Image (cartoon, protein in one colour):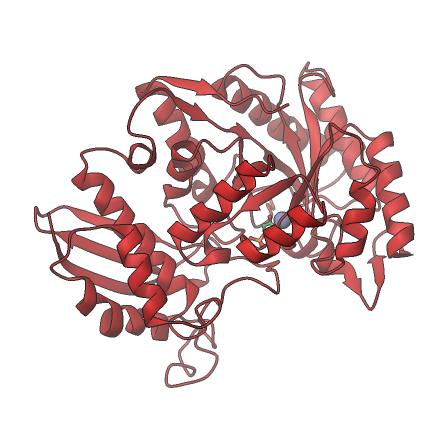
Length: 422
Ligand code: PGA
Ligand code: ZN
């Protein structure tokens, strides 16, 4: 089977913002489309998402956020090189690396690069007669990742109504994927009811489908979610614990961590003590980006004294970048990594980062972005790569359920085990 046609074009993401898709036609007539997500609390060291801030498309109705140039890069530069070839994402990635030798796809755009990488991989899976998950794991029982599900949102995803970005439920006591999802769904629904009792407008959801309920402190937000876990009849800490994404880069400036809602400011050392207290006073099992993306010293200082069972995830810290992960391993900056393919730009090098993390015994959490689409390739990657965990937002919004529902489908139609990382 060979590639007959390939188109790059602009679509809309879950925030109504332009993003990029690529559709590939194979010689057997089958069609393979990849839709690319986009972040809001992006890390400084991510590969470059190309948008039309300047150049000939800057005057479009989308006010500089369109991706027409990235589409043109696909159609004019990439498509002619792929037509007539068998779909092979390693080879396509190699071609993309040669086409744009800059760091982070400055020229063609990481959004264009990833759209090619994923659409070619989907076509390749089809040519092999199976799903994208099965392209990576052709035989044996599949492993479904432990979900980590957004209940409350703040930070850049909900007008800063909580100082941090997410309070998530981590159903580590569940014994199957569907049981885990039934628990977190119940918690999310109870949180909505309890939020209304506090006077919150719970029909207003945040970017990833979590509830945008205002809390004056991080502790109050944690206590609220913990109480919802109890209300549904689950054991806090034994069945379900909390995970926090601080997204601390967002509130760090000139050496100071400033929590505006709590009206408190901390130096790095003070913030380390603050986090240490928070994880002992709240049922927290996992923290993400507790320190800013380049505050390496704080990460290592915190880790040197962190409880052994605490998961400490680098998201903006690593930006799914191999050199940054190597530094993190050397400096013992964390013990887990968030894997976001669009931070990297290529499927093959995202896989390389993933495998390096596994070999260093880092926990792996495959993650969506706050701006998502109805595409579900992320779920297939998580399963095909045997990731321990997955984080795609809440249980609300079809951009989110597309991924959960793909995991339900795999659970129903394949022989699967369930990941129990805790
Ligand atoms: P983002 O948020 O996609 O806006 O970067 C997700 C996260 O920080 O995990
Ligand atoms: Zn994050």
